[in-house]
Amino acid sequence: EVQVVESGGGLVQTGGSLRLSCTVSGFAFDDYAIGWFRQAPGKEREALSCISGNDGSTYYSDSVKGRFTISSDSAKNGKTTAYLQMNSLKPEDTAIYYCAAQVGPPYYYCSGYSNGMPYYGKGTLVTVSS
Image 1 (cartoon, helix red, strand yellow):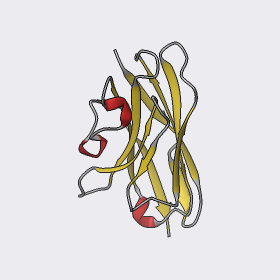
Image 2: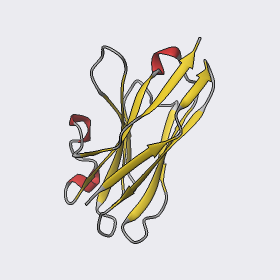
Image 3: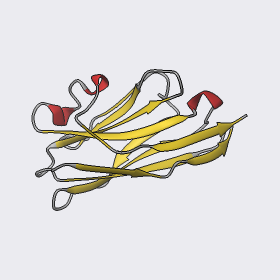
């Protein structure tokens, strides 16, 4: 069973930085992709970024490109930790941030990630004060 646990949210001032972490377990070899999503109050969930465990490719939404960076540790025994480094934060980045995962081909290439992933963590709140 795939499990996803994220952490690292908090309060930060405009222009500040924050790093979110996400531990994913329960997959085989490098057959996974990890994505970050967020949902602000009254808004729909937004796909932010994805990293492929298979070839390391990364993808970003226009809203965070150049400010956020996704990365992940090498997987071991079906477990890995991914990160979302968030710089130059703005008040409009305030949201609950969710880590998610999908496994197996072709999903380990981040295929279709912007439509959502099957496995989500509980979310972590990020608040950017003005």
